[in-house]
Length: 480
Image 1 (cartoon, one colour):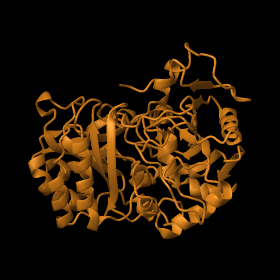
Image 2 (cartoon, helix red, strand yellow):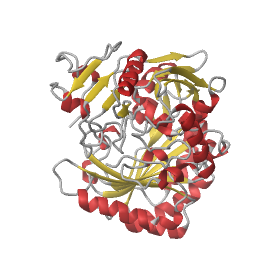
Image 3 (tube, helix red, strand yellow):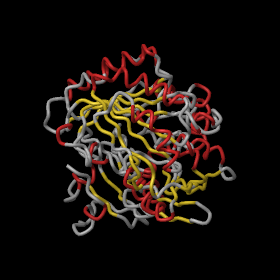
Image 4 (tube, helix red, strand yellow):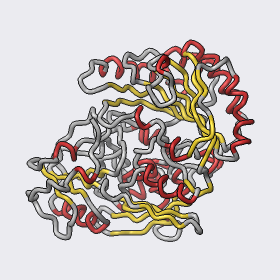
């Protein structure tokens, strides 16, 4: 199953809506619309919700109209950007989904190294336009990740150790508030709101456009995966720990544990074989990257080494077919410290105990520019963690792996308990304890966010998210 494009939903089969929204020019899709089931489907196929109305916006004025309509009619509001939303909060039952997925425009000023991006864009849209000028900013590692969701939660990606998180490159945002007002947030305009948007998620309004700082990247970078047999996981991780400790900021790495997916370049005899895969991307001169990566590439005789010069925009989309729209996903996640031997033993023991060949573990190396930014300078928390790890149960619709691998994920997460150091809010699932949202920020940042929430959304209108309630209000999340 794939998620339909904007052109496939609404256009060509538009039917008269059950309701009208004053000033709304996009598509209104209700349960009797031919495209309703396509329009309510999101990336995570395990989510099955039935909103009363989907308001697919084509501009900021539509967003304003939809928010005001929802408030006037006391409707639950869910906000959908363009991307993944593993927790499923982008769609609600019996409310209105304000859908920005048709708003995907990107404009680049190469001289000033800035980009303006609409709230429904995907990172593939941004990379496509910015790489025309040899520019980029930190984005997701999958091209169909949504710009809005990734940015508002913080934004980790291949470039973060060199150029910071996505929020560290956000210069301004246009936001529709719970009152249906349009504000511009920046260091100079509504700075409290701007601070909160940089990591606080979708709690404070609907962001209809972002302004980003860009950097010289590519068009070619040294990038690619290195694969080792799963039996070597412990020794590979010990070498990796020592290797990344002194790695330059230009080197981004992600370690993946699981069956080798049938991606281009991976020989057929390795497909579905349990492997440790280290993805690499060097955001600097290719000859420097060759020197930096040489020790890792020579370690323990890899099964496969695909590192080489490659277009940055191609590397950004290289994992797309391994995380397909419509598959079922269940995640647990945490931040981790440096990889001590006892932590490595826990990871090696649990990482390959899943049942579904599509389930996997992903571990992102942080530090670099991420940890040098001031703690509390943005709402992103836990900047001193060394790694972020996700434990991802994945199974196809109709398969029977769901219960087994959900249990595997929970058991693995429990085994990591004594090593946990907070969590990345974008990696939280839909059935989390509300205290985990506080864990994503720490007490000081969370309490400050609750104060901003009380100012801009005192009624907690925007609560279909990893929720931060207004000050004095207990946080709540929406269960899957």
